[in-house]
Image (cartoon, rainbow, N blue to C red; front, side):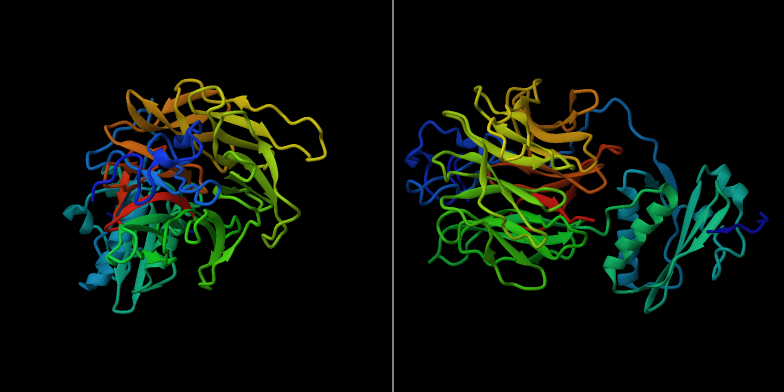
Length: 484
C-alpha cells in the first residue's frame, strides 16, 4: 500500500421421498433417522441388501427471519463503497452489488449506505488526488472504496483513512463476476489479514419433480454455484437420487464425490468439473453413504451395510484418491445405527452419530493403527441435547457444528473443544440440518426444512445473520464448500 498524500479539506409424508415406504424395511430395529441428518432424514430400503439408503427429508422452511443466540457480536469495520463512477451499464452496477454483498457478509466489515455528502468528497477521475480525511473521520468511516467502470473494465481503489494508506487494485473485465469475488477476498486480506471465502464455490443436491411422467416422480442431482447462489450449474443427470457431494480436499480441486442410487444400491461416485465421466469409487458390496474425506485426502469414512447393519467404515487412499487395500470397519454396536462421520483436521479422530445408547448422540473415536488388536471405545461428545446429528468439524479444529433438537425444533449448535461447552447458534420455527464449515472456520452453510421446501442459508459467527441463498426452484440440501 502507498501512504496518503496530505489532503485538504407435491405432498410427501415424513417417511417417503418418491420411494418405498419405511414400513417395508427388512431391518425393523434400525433407527434410520440417524442415517441422514436428524429425525427428518432417513435411509430407505426396498430389498434386503439390494435397495438400501434412499433419502427422505421433510420438515420446515425458513421464510421468517432467523435469530442467533450468542453472547456478543464482533465489531464490524464500516466501509463506504462509492456509487459506480463513469458508467450506467447494468452489468457494471450488478458488479457493484456483488462486491457490496461480499464485503457486507464477510464477518469483518459492514457497508455504509450511500450518502450524497460522501459522494461529493470523492474526487474523480482520480480519487487519490484529494482525500479529505477529516470528513471521513467525522463521519466515523475508517475505510473508503472508490469504484469506477468503463465499457470493458471495473476498477477499485482502497483508501484506508485510519492507517493513511491506499491501494489501487488491478482492473477487472466488466463481465468477470468471479473476479469480483476474488477482489472482495483480496480487499478482506489487505484490511483484516484474513483470506476471504467469497471466491469459493459450493456443491449441493437439488431435488425436483420429474417432468417426464414415464419416470419416477422425483429425482435429485448435484449442482454447483458461487457462494451467493449465482452461476448455478447442474453437474449430474440423475435417474434416481444424487446427494452428499463434496470436493476433493485439494486447493481449487475439480474433482468431487457424491452418493447416487442410479443403479439401485447407493454407492459413492467420483467425477470432475472438467470431465463429465462418472465412476464408482469405493469397491465394496452393499450400500455406502454419508462419505467424508480427511483433510489431507489420505482417507475416506462412510456408512455401509456391508456387514449387515449401517456401520462406520474407513478406506485408506493414495495421493490420487485410489483405494489402498480393503476398507475396514471402525465401529459397530449391537442394534445400533451409525451415521455422519467427520474427520478432525489432523486426521487422528472421527466424530460420528450413533444411537447405541438410545437417542442419537455424537461420539468421538480415535483412529488407530489397524494392526492394534483392541479397538478404541468412542467417547460421548454432546450431552446437552438428546438428539444430535450431522456433525461437521471446523477446519481449524476448534469447533464442531451439528443439528440438535431444542424446544421441539432442530437448530444448529456449536460444540467448543477448548471449553467443552455447547451453545445454540440458530433459532426460529424452522428445522435446520446439515451444517458445513467454510475453510475460514467462520462461515457455515446449512439447509432449512419444510414439508415441501428446503433452502440453503449462510451464517457467520461474527455477524449472526442468516442469509438465504437464492437458487430457484427445488429442494436444496447437503451443501459443502470448495477447498481453498
